[in-house]
Length: 90
Image 1 (cartoon, helix red, strand yellow):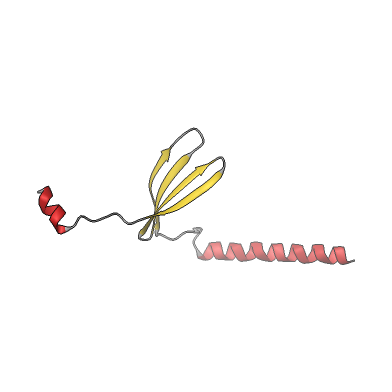
Image 2 (cartoon, one colour):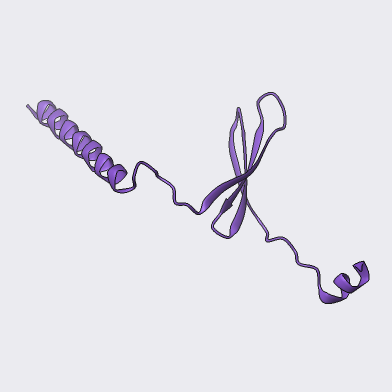
C-alpha cells in the first residue's frame, strides 16, 4: 500500500511540474533566456572541442565544450586606452 501511495504521489508531483513548466513557457513566449544574451562568436578548436563567446548583458563569457564536459569563464572587460596612449597613436 505504501509503495502504491509513493508512486501516486510521485506521478502527481511530476504532472504538476510539467503543467507549471508549460505555464511558464507560455508566459515567456517560448523563450527561456532574455534578450540580454548574444552569441558573439564560435570556433571549432578540434574534432570534439568547440568554443563559444557570449555576451550576457554587459559581461562577456567564454564557454568551451568537449567530450569531457563544459568550461565557463567570465572574461574581464576590454581595456580602454588612456588619453596618453590615444595621443601617441595619432
